[in-house]
Length: 178
Image (cartoon, rainbow, N blue to C red):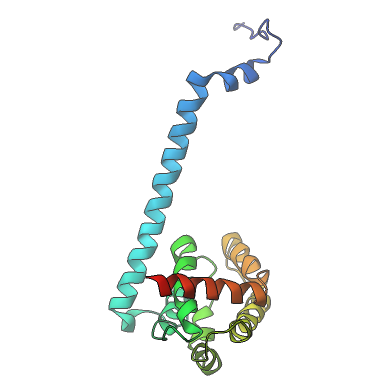
């Protein structure tokens, strides 16, 4: 029979002792974070590359996807609702890519959303656009092609119009500063 692991005399279990050993855990933790950070950076970099390619060649992009939604919001002036929508969609795409995008571009390319994005930047107008988007995601529940898509749909369905309005305005203000 193999050697039996006995609990250390200190009363800590073998696992507790291993986890408390700085020479064992900290390097493993750092390596794990390093790999996670590298993978996250590669993912975000890939998504930003997709955005830049879409901006350079909009005619090659599916207008119904998330990149199509981004393109639908790109040409609005700083005083218009769309000024906050464009960077908000870019941020969502940078983090989540095309996961759960469904056909969100249809909403933002549609005449009602286009008209709203051209309206003056104020909370009421932001919330009105936010209500349209919120309803879109509510209607998409249960339609995800896979669990990750469904997770993103559920996430979108749970961000209310008021929060969407605040997020759009926050991104518009950040854009104002740059």
